[in-house]
Length: 205
Image (tube, rainbow, N blue to C red; front, side, top):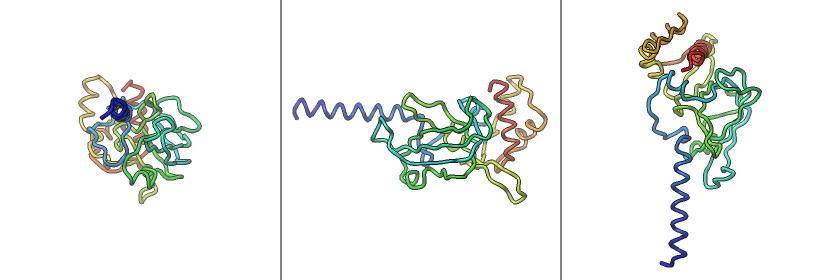
């Protein structure tokens, strides 16, 4: 093997390693192994938290890392719970699962979400905190109430939260404390979830 060939192979290897490093915080929605995190941890990790409606979602190559497939999602912001987003909010997320490429990772125009978003990497890639844990689809239940459900069915969302808040001396409103203590899994009223997040943000969680 010539020196030029070895050098080219080394360059390809280093590029692959670099790609893996920069995309590690922003894996695709499907197939990603995520560490269980409760709402307090997700809220603390997120740089931006917002409720909004999907305006567009398109799959395209990353403009710099052209070997990466990404999805670019734009939402019309209805409420900002953390961060400075207003008007519209656009993010780019790395996707690797072919199903995410086919259906834009599940984002569709007109859908409503409550998103807890990580800060973008230096390459402009981001994702919901905890992946599917920080992406709440908003919909109406049988009674017409707007509810929020994440990709894990809200399982363990409140796990350990009561004890963490007690140790920190954080006092929530009675309604938020009731949600924390009673909820185990399943849909949560969107306004109640947003209210709890808002309190956690105000407490610096």
